[in-house]
Length: 562
Image (cartoon, rainbow, N blue to C red; front, side):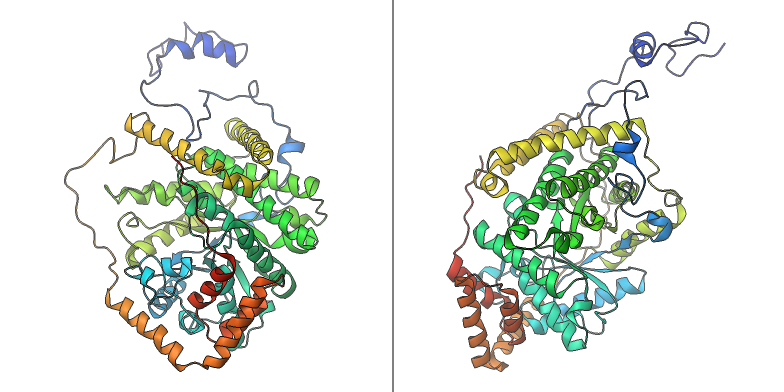
């Protein structure tokens, strides 16, 4: 006689056949008590059934699944996916001065990284030079300090820009960073038309979540559209926007909100470019996305699959795109910084590996794995190498790359994919009823939704309904102190002296003339990118350009959310 581990029944007691999942649940499952106190729902609050079968989940394979590389791309954007080419392993790097970050770039390339990803410090992200009073104490702290074309030249010294793909995580000052990059490449002899890479430029998510802006939304959207138009005409291999859900998730949203808000931002950029007079198929193939990989494993996989399907449908049916490449959602993924804990930080290695695996099983095109010490400081070289090795182990040792969309057809994953899609469309309707993304931002709709989701999640953690290992269960009082990366305070003074020397040594008349042209352009309606490139070549600093634009457009003040 066999007794199951729950001790609930013998084989003699069990029915020999069950008439569907409902009878299984009534006769067998409900006789076994569930664990009490913990939630059986996703982080987004979607209830999870104990079992999914063909009786409970309807899958329309032709409509909802299809094949990889075929509309609606639920199973992947390329026919061969990782059997043809692995995702780009693109570790985020940037700290201190341009020279130090250049050394880290070279280190990563030597250890197998296949693309560069640049983090900028807070003054650079907010449009202030390193010698501005507001920059005090922040220069080079959370990324590299870039004040001028000279700094950008140092950052990529010895790195042939015609041979690498570069990502830059920068938003309100993205036009200026891109102009610096174009000038560096052309000084290397690389035409702008041959440059490959991505710049984030997603200003809408700044108002929604990350809070790094300068101007009101309308002139900011003008700058984004200027970049889309400029890249469409002059940089056909470049992605001018990486529409980002990552920071929305890091601000406390759940997966449903990350999916819906990110896609709605994407639709808004598409509409702005069409209104500018661009044909959708001329720019849409170069739009890209950036998602978070959080810890709710199956919900994350379903999120990526739903995102591809929604984007393909909307681009084809709502915006009339005819080119199949316009229907493709290609995206970069980064593991969740917000999931890292300062307590028992080595456990973050496990978290990151699982998050990275969900991104791979979800079909990402590019991936950054966080370092285990990032809850404490910028990562050390050892931690960065281990994070990169995590990707390499997934790619070469696990076998998950051998077949495409291995979780496709899972009743649970298909059900989650469908439910996330429904939830996203509900948010689309709510946002459109408010007049669109910009009016919704001004009404604090997104901010309230994220704040509510964050509060719910934190309440569940504090009630121990959701367990965080090392934080609210399995705590350890004896933890070894980690060696962390410390930025030498002297670097700030060195950077300040560098930008002052640049101003003193440049052709002042040429710089002032370029700045005046930029200001006049901002007062009119012309595309500002050529004027920004001219100013960059004249060694006008980032802060000087931003100050000129602030004079014309003013600054944005958000209404607080309580």
